[in-house]
Amino acid sequence: MKKVIINSKQKKFCVVLAATLCLVSANVMSQDNTKAKSETKEDFKSSGKISGYAFGDYAFKLHADSALRGKQQYSGLPKNYSAFNLRRVYLGYDYQFSPNISSQLLLAHESGFESNAGSTNSLADGNRGVYVKAMNVRFKNVIPRATIVFGQQATPTFATLSEGIWGYRSVEKTIADMRGVSSSTDLGLGVFGKIGKNENVGYDIMVGNGNGAKLENNKFKRIYTSLYFYLLDKKIVIQGNYEHDRTTSTPVHQDINNFKAYAAYHTSSTTFGVEAFTQLNTNNAQYVQNTNTLYSDVTPSGISFYVTQELTPNKLKFFVRYDMYNPDKKYDSKLSYVGGYNTTKESFATLGLDILPYKNIHIMPNLWYNHYASKLPGASGNLKGDYDLEARVTMYFLFNK
Picture 1 (cartoon, one colour):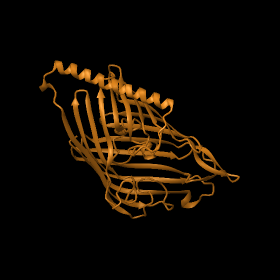
Picture 2: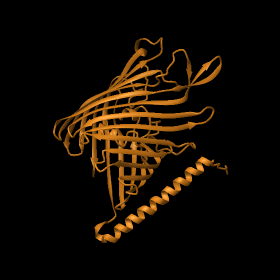
Picture 3: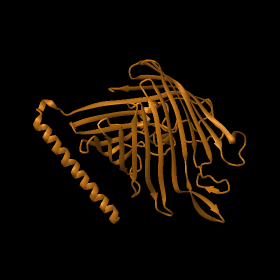
Picture 4: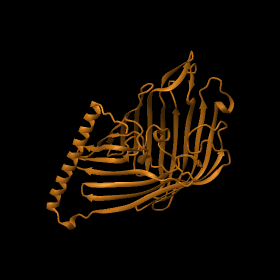
């Protein structure tokens, strides 16, 4: 059996984590016992709720990038390709143990690439795969106006705020999600809270494996932080995020540092949003110089703008979005990069209508467009610039919501 070595810093972290969990359990038990003395058994009953949603499309490819570039939903597919597809299916169960303790289970199928039987979204026989998106226990009011969450849970990068305000994950991910800046879920310990009587300031702090819903594969942990403010009766929100993770220490240290800013004006009928990020990946790219393999930093960045507008109350909406993405602001055309280095800028756009024939049922005709622009000095013709264009009819429906 392989011997596990824990250094002093990790020991201190484990002690602090264990003490925190003990404090949480003792505090919650105390709160619930106090509450139980002042309530009869009829005042609270443990209960659970099943809910879920799904979205998918009929999609037809109007134009294909000649170089088959990209890692997005329709990348690599030929012109005139068409398919029906379920891009996401969620089935969840929420259980309330007591007024202050609850749990969440969420099973998911998600199709990240169209008709890719070899992807992690499908099983060996080609059927759709299902995985655990969330499985956690939640403690409220241990910290005033806050919830402590332990287990597989949503991360604060985009899943807890900006994705909901964008409102059209059924059409496309937010830019940070779409470009792989971070995962929407992770296994760890998080604190999500508000400050002040009006709760106009919020914060998120989380420590997780940094490997999404997959099993841990290294000793390092990812730190997530978020701070956000509401203005004008919560019609305006401004958020800043910072994350840090070390992915490996050999042969060189490789760290990930994420910086993200988000601002939106959001009402029941109109939303304007802008989201921008930059990421510093230290020693992430390899290049050859005089037969020696050297390393350089990689700094992806992107910005997204979108507008959604209600045209007919509870019946018809309109949405439009435009993104710009650069896989590395530090690209140097003089270097001989190796190992799959990305030299292509991308621009994404979508627009469509959101038709609501009945509550919780959405039918959305839309266009999905992704443009590729090579940064290579000698690129010309279609290699210099080309695009994927998809026409879709998307259906999104929710139940027990």
